Image (cartoon, rainbow, N blue to C red):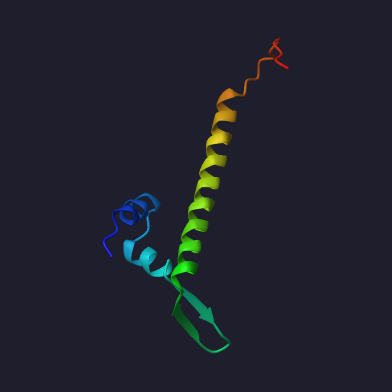
Length: 83
């Protein structure tokens, strides 16, 4: 509760603190007739948090690389070569 890092993360991602803190520590199980919400063990929650962080980092890195490549792209033929 009242985790400052999680508050900043939620603000940046545009999700509510309550939802994120709940779903980082719980999972939803659906059967044919019912839906259960079950808490997950601490180690599994830590692994899920780390996987989410790695996924966001990978997406952000790819976005940055794409934007840098677009900024460097030129329609003028260049007569220089490095290699």
